[in-house]
Image (cartoon, rainbow, N blue to C red):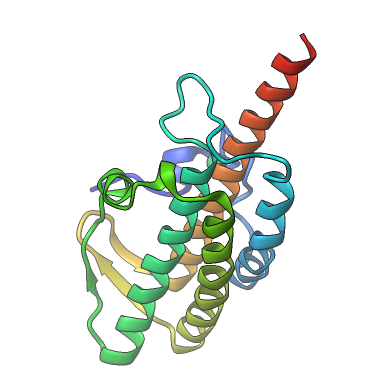
Length: 175
Ligand SMILES: [Zn+2]
C-alpha cells in the first residue's frame, strides 16, 4: 500500500508545517483562498525561477497544484454522478512533461488555478454532502475528507516551495 497524507509527510508536515487536523470544510475554505494566496506569493516573479535541487520552477508548481485539484475534483464528481468509485494513481511528472509546465506563462497558470480551485470547491462540497468514498488503486479507501485534506496539503506544501524560491532569490540579490 502506498503511503500518503500524514503518514507520508508527518503531522504536522515536517516540511511545510501543514496541520492535518483541519476539517474538510476548512480545507474547502483554504482551497477557495488559494488563487489569491498564490497570486500574492508570485507577485513580481517571471515564473521561471527555481531552486537548485528542486525539479520544478515557480510556474510548474502552480500548474501542478492546478492539475492536482482538477484531477481529484473530476474523480469525486465521477464517483458521485456515476457511482464508479475505483480510481487509478496518476504520474505527476509525466503530466508535467506532457503539458510542458515550465513553459506555461505564469499569468496563464494563475488564470487556470482560479477555475480549478472554484471547480474543486464545488465538487468537494457536493461529495462531502453525498459521502463519496473512492477506492484508490494504490492507497485503498479514500474518503472525500481524506481527499480534501490531501489536496489542501499539496497546495500548502507547494506554496512553501515557492516561498523558498522567493526567499532564496531575495538572499542572492542582497549579496
Ligand atoms: Zn507539507
